[in-house]
Image (cartoon, rainbow over all chains, first blue to last red; front, side):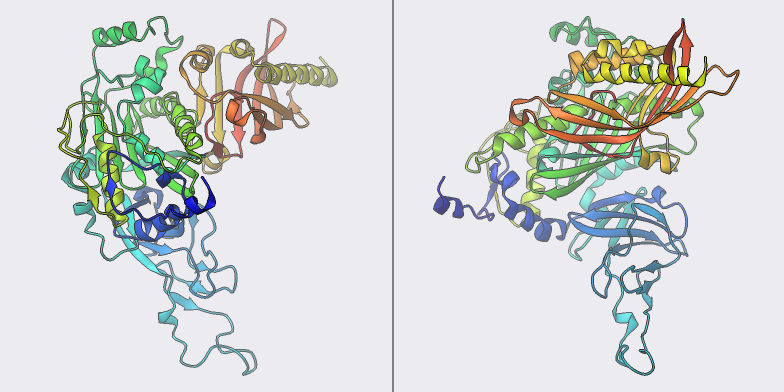
Length: 421
Length: 162
């Protein structure tokens, strides 16, 4: 491709066909820049943490919405706030730890002093020194607060938005997702730890990965062999007009598991210490559910491991994945021990998750210099209707619908394809 | 055994331990642990907050064998090799106690062996080994190994033990 041709690739698309995604959307830095303005600062809700991470007045937790640094605080009255983590004076980052306790927020640069709701309370040398310098007499502290953003919680899961146009959170999520969150976040949590990994791919490749229920039985051999996550298992993929997508699987019986092992020639593969998979029934027959909420949250229940995964875009070809592991405050020691053991399944060293980072990097590498080609997302039809099957890509198409909407792109009808759900 | 002699044996043991991983003799790795043991790789981020979640955890030699089996047969990842560099050992064996406590800083460099990245080396993880060793038939074995990684942000994935 010569330079003249390359210049023709503007990030703007005239429309988006959710069954064929131009690879340019994963490699063009201009797309990443547009996402920051249109998507991350647009009328959407981004996951910013769990209320249980802010246990007492003065607790704070820093994170980002897209690439914009933000901080969630619990003020001295217990009220939660979401603030842009940027001093109203000259722009320095004011909260500089991942999390902690504060009485006031003091900018390290010139000591502008804010309360935990972001209101400016004091500035040094306001009246100058010996009558010289200082701020004008009409300088209004109240007009220089930290920028407060919208914050709403659903079942203690906190979401933030830059935009006054974002619908109420419960409308954004939809009833099925609210119900799913209520199922997992049903009582006070015990935060059990964090993991982080930096992956060299565009964040949207990972967002696709989490909405693709059938790669798990093909890519994650461990998963297919030792858990019920087989494409042949009884399960469903729920999508809808909203921004959350649920895939869930029931536990299956040993006969079905054996049949799968025969088919995939893994029958000799056994665990020397089966205690890893000896969990405790906790959510009825539901062995697994993965809830993806556009744009940056995954809530997972895999056996007895419970976690949120936050997708943080860094550069067009780099993202960070932050996993927050939790149990419940009323977990007995045995259940806590089960969760800690099953934590082996997920995260950067997870038996059934470590391949995901590798897979999306394989895609990213192969995309270099191929902005003019596109992927095919037609498994299970061309629509986004809910499906009583795992062999579908309906939730990927739904992701791209949400993405196209957020980016302000008209969605192009993919044709008269029927659902094969 | 005198202090110098013990120190030498511990040093030889840890050199053998890291060589086993660096030379991709993973099948021998579980045998360096006692049958009932603890092995965990835990980010300093969690240690600092007294949070228990580890990235990799095993409480039996059999669980470590399962890690190796998955590494060889189930998991998919870009092929790579490690080089462990250990700092000076701090060895503490109280008289009359059965276990020997060892602490050592480490750095692990990872060199990629996949075609796209062949030969690229990078610092993969840095941290501290916190070990409790015991004698078993006159050989040192790991009773407990806590690998505290300061490198909380794992580059892509962690499949090979540290």
